[in-house]
Image (cartoon, rainbow, N blue to C red; front, side, top):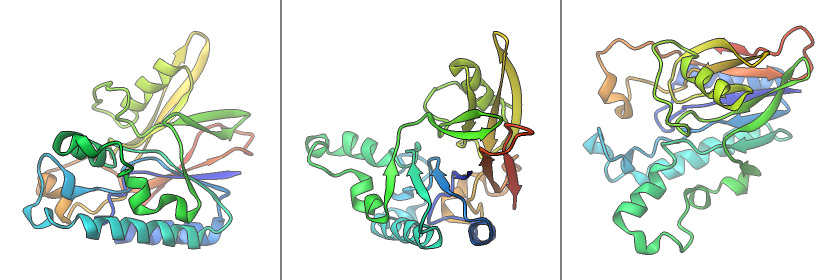
Length: 238
């Protein structure tokens, strides 16, 4: 079974070019599973830093566009098993409530409910969710902010830290970089893979990088549990 992993889309600031490529892949390949590996939403209106002032009152629009994006994904993949891992941008919601209005944090004001994640038959799952990746192996999928493991100069470097810590192959987003690096845990060879991103740096949420050189890579990742030649993913660059 093929598993499509999408991360760091930053709706409503996604790249139209990236989205077109994803839509084409869904039409042609019809993967059996889709993992949304965090930062699908940006929730820019809730950011505590580097917020574009024009978006301070646009949370309702962000929620609506996030919901619409999930609806379109489900329509494009009616039979796929779709799961969602929370990223640090989705976590802005609970952090904002905790910091600004902690007294209401326990009355059901979670972002998946407001966006309507379950309405599209999408399941929230914990970081470390495992999928098959070939040769009888599996890969554990995280967003990438969970371990507080710092950063890396190289694409794949932070993911490899996760892999060595957990003793399994690991996929992360978060860095917006792309790369695969290998290491050993005892005699076991593991890899860490970073899956690029799907945002558009010309849009408001990315004001902080405009005009700066980055090593970010537009794209997404596919794992195939049935391949016998390798457990490695295919990265589709946009």
